Amino acid sequence: MPHLMTSDGCNIFYRTHGVDTSKPVVVFLNGTTQTTLYWGNHVPLFSKGYGLLFYDARGQGQSDLGTTPISLNLHVSDLKNLLDHLAVDRSHLVGISHGARVALEFALEFPKIVNQLVMCSISAQTSDRCRAIVRSWLEILKLSGLKAMAWAALPAVFGNPFLKDHQKIIDKIVDAVVIRNSRNALIAQLEAVLSYPAPDRVPADFDSPTLIITGSQDPLVEPDDVRQLAHHCRATHRHLAGIGHSIPAEAPEIFQKLVLEFFDSDT
Image 1: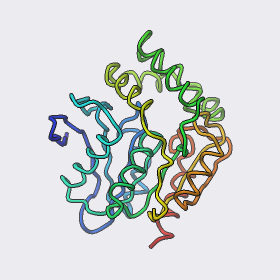
Image 2: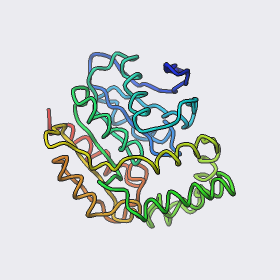
Image 3: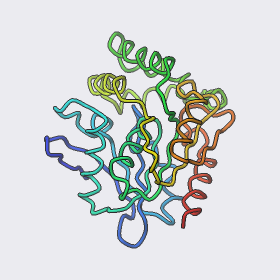
């Protein structure tokens, strides 16, 4: 399995599909607790026209936690090093939740590398409710472990229709979170997230074409804050009824349609 060794000795796991000079590259950025496997259902369609890059951010999945304290800037540096390693000088970034936060910060720091930016489940501010939810996950994780935290997170991560339609596999979803995550690494990640700056620091000259997708049943994202971020980024905003925080998993076909139409709109 391919890994990138960072300058501070951290192994970053990644997967590629058809990455070469013949077609543009799409980089998929995971949310917290997710791994590269999260995007598996999207490979067949996106790979028809794009090279694909998936990676586990440090502390996620098969990537090391490393010894350097986690920060938003460190995640951005890891992504830049990975793109340099693969000789990718232009890319589309598609991120969800924490991955969207990293994608936005990357686009702010390295705008010439970003063709288009797609962000799911993100807003301009971290609301008090969102902060309390993340803090509750952290405390449950410390006191009771990964499985308890995964169960506690379900109502915040998925909308009602998804939970109703997938009752038979909910236990498997929880088990996957437990198997694919490290308790200590996840504690470090959640502690870091609580200290991130708000995503509203978008300069007036920001010009990366941007699509923001949100769900009506997402308790981690406030509608007014999303509209504020969309205004700052001059972004197209699509708000999906009956969908929660995990948009690519809950509404895969809608997600694919919106993203591919957005990519095509700028060609």
